[in-house]
Length: 232
Length: 287
Image (cartoon, chains in turn orange, brown):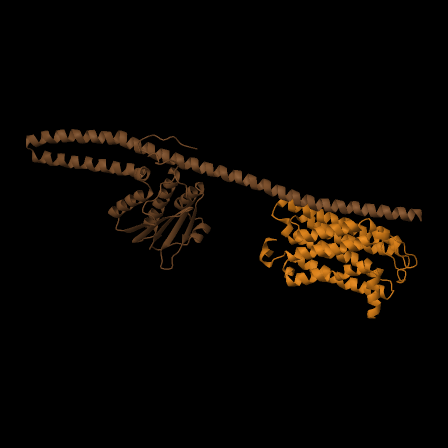
């Protein structure tokens, strides 16, 4: 069993690092007691869920089993957890309402997309990546982050953004989703059970930025101080 | 095959362009936020300076008005009282020659009332404009103030300084310290029901410290600030200090009473000897 995993990790080092790097922000969240903040608590949940799903996917991939269903189901779940973080950060009610609507909307859209992208839902062996959902998630996430940036510029309540944890979280997410937005629809055609299209270096971009995103999360959480909890 | 290669490049370029935009967006937010904070700081500094200028003008006007009243008292009422006293002296001689004892007694009473009034006018004039401060300096002015207070009240006021020759400071600074000392001592007498007041004046290379301590009932400065009970006196002290970059701190000594410490940066007077301010010369307001 261990040989299978190690062989997979050696053959796919970048995507494997992207899985295990999640442990770093998770550990920092506990060490810095960042879960005291509501938004960072949701980030903690996201990281924990992501680690579990990634490990499960790694397990299936190592055993040459189709794991795409986990990827597809994780899309609305991840967006709900990440969008939920912004629910506690947005000051204006319409933005919070938009978040809730978008979370519910993406859930239904993703369900439709899974059905639309797979002719036979029972056939897990040839289950395919959704065509639009990941891209829609990316667009929504970028929109929410930009709205939040606009809010912090407008409110002028954070004197130094470099020491503000949530700015690092937003920056990490913005980079990750920006790297993914064009690649996401192509994955639907590229990764099929019988035919895998070689995307070259482009294939690794999301994984590289997943690692960068986790590092940004870590920097942000490192800057978190329970003393300043009330100010954030 | 050709299409696949093109797609790969297109994807790579599009993703890199998107990432470049994301980086630019993050950099822009950081830069814009920083710039807006700098602008806000500038505006806040301008507002602060403007408020300081307003306060300075108000206090200058107050001092000018005090001088004007002192001058009017001295020149008009003082002169008239002196002339009245002279006339009464002449009349007194005539009354003395007539030998009427009752008239003589009324005369003496009138003379004593006029003399008393002249003394009162002189005292009010000196209270309005501290001439001793301007002529001899802070230590002498404080000593004179204490002397007068001890005469009028059943109080023990002690004054100490860490130097025998207190170097002369700028006119505004000396007046600020003197007025603050006056306010703190008056507050102690009015509100603290104290029997002893200690005034300590200290100077080092950078700061002048004025400490006024009483053994009265004491007060909690935080509570007073929170409950907006800070009267014009305490606000006046803070306003005066704001103009000369000074600070004030209130303490409650363990043995009881209260203590106020005002600290102001040293501002030695330029030139050898400060120009004395005569109380009866009209001063222009310097803004």
